[in-house]
Image (cartoon, rainbow, N blue to C red; front, side, top):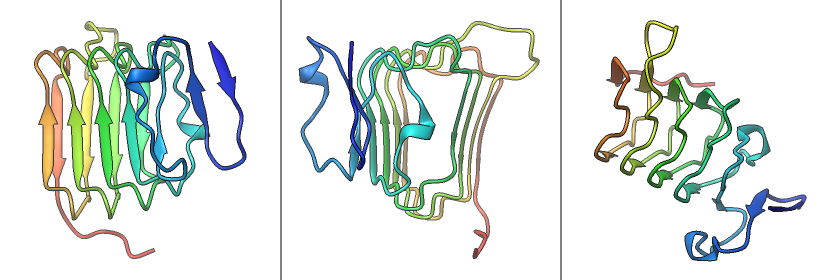
Length: 151
C-alpha cells in the first residue's frame, strides 16, 4: 500500500482498487482502504465515500462523525469497519444521507454490554440506508431529532 501525502486532503491508494475510488474534487471527497483515520480527514469535506473492505484495522473500534460542518453524504461500502463497536453521527447540519452497504459493522459480541449506532441532531438528514447484515450484533440503533446547538 502506498500513502500519498497532500496538504489539502488525505488519500490512501493501493494497486487494484482504482475502480473503487471515484474521481472527484479532492477537497470535497475522501476515500479509504484498509487503514482509516478520521483525524486525517479535512473538516471541509462534503462527501465521505469508503470503498469495500474499508477500515479493517483492529484498532478502529469507534467512529465519531461530529466535526464536519459541511459533510452532506456518508457512504460506506460492503464489508467495512468489522471491528467498530460504536458509531456516532452528531450535529452535522448539512448531512442529507447516511448509507451503509451490506455486512458492515459486524463485530461479534464483546465484553462491552452495548454496541451502538447513534445518529442525532442532523436537521437535513432525509435518507438512512442500512444494508443486509450491517450492525448485526448491535443492540442500539438510535435516531434522534431536536434543536441543534447554535455555536
